[in-house]
Amino acid sequence: MAKSLQHSINSHRALLTDLLGNALNEYAGRILPQMDDAERLDECLRKAFRALDYCKYVYVLDAHGVQLSSTVNRYGADPEGRGRDRSERPYMKHMQDASIDFNLSEAYISRNKKRPSITAIQSIWDGNGQRVGFLGVDYDLRELPHSDVIYEEPSQWRQIKGDPAIRSGLFAQQRAESVMDRHIDVVLSVHEALILDQGVHHFQIHFSSSRTTIWHRDDPYVYRILTNEDLIDPNICLAYPRRPYFERAIVPPADVGVTEQSPLTQTH
Image (cartoon, rainbow, N blue to C red; front, side, top):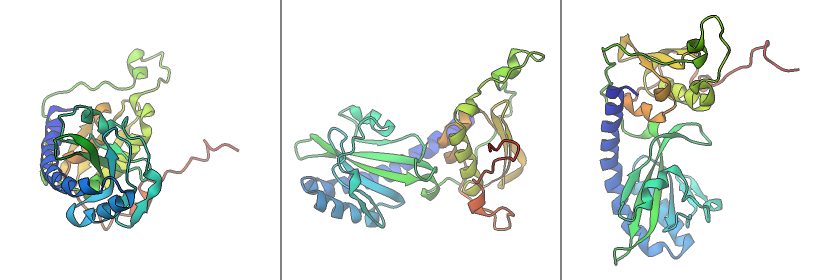
């Protein structure tokens, strides 16, 4: 990933860590007295939406990463989440260190909505300084505060490696699986998010070379190139200011992520 792009992402993650970490740390103290009663715990989490801005789902885990509460959102609670082992989830990896108080995960594509998302995990400590559980909060990236500063494309020349089939021999080419092929679901979700929420008004996808050229509404005369590494990382959405979908766009927002199978490729 380009240095300036990664720097922009890291700077925004630092701002989000301060913003979300302080709020979760304060609310974790209210949860501790309720951890022995699942119903009271769920009721406490329902009130979290008054104190915690932007959150999508909240839940509480025990010290081993097993869910104690329901998975709670603004509209209710799903008790099927109780007993779910989240200890191996990517956002829990850093929490294996007993000294870690808070962690903000890398961005990922959510399973259900296929949206760029992020999870914050806050340790819950008892009066003796022992960690007795975790407060987990899931966020939709489009609902979090974004910087209004757009990253600058590097001016120096860059060599971008594309599809191995192209490099293996011009006159003896065979189609080889590319990085974009292996991560196509994530790549398409990232493109959809950039169009709908991050101000990208036009892009060209180069499937053979696994890269995309994009144009942003804030800087429409300058294109930016996203490589393999950029496209498979939902964190890239943090590098662009949030912008509403253009109201005069011909394609309705609901149709942006819809794909249709060509008649030539349909099976009968």
